[in-house]
Amino acid sequence: LAAIEVNVSSVAAGQSITAKWRGKPVFIRQRTPEEVEAAKQVPLADLKDPVARNENLASDADATDANRTAKGKEQWLVMVGVCTHLGCIPLGQSGPFNGWFCPCHGSAYDTAGRIRQGPAPQNMAIPPFEFISDTTVRIG
Ligand code: FES
Image (cartoon, rainbow, N blue to C red; front, top):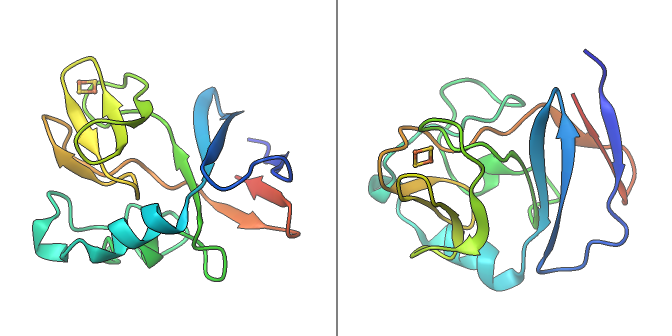
């Protein structure tokens, strides 16, 4: 299926846009330095799902904050915006971990989109993506 290219030049720190790829929403968020720092501070042992779920990395890569992002572009989170429980679309910048919160059954994700609380079993998926320029992301 076709890749998409998304211009993110209008997305400031603390803002997000939602693209559509393969019929699914993809959240593209430029995280604030505070959000990145909060995600980095989380010990891996605290994570419910210890695996990065990043299609750009090996399937057993750790779910560190860096492994949820692209090298050199760590402030950007590019993530399939589908709850890994039963597929609802989580709300951004809400919930107890200040990341995403799924109102369907209460799954809470952190600022790296990692599952921290509730019934969802996995971190939200990172699709294949790359920055092809400073302001353009190709997904797929
Ligand atoms: Fe998100 Fe159930 S679908 S918590």
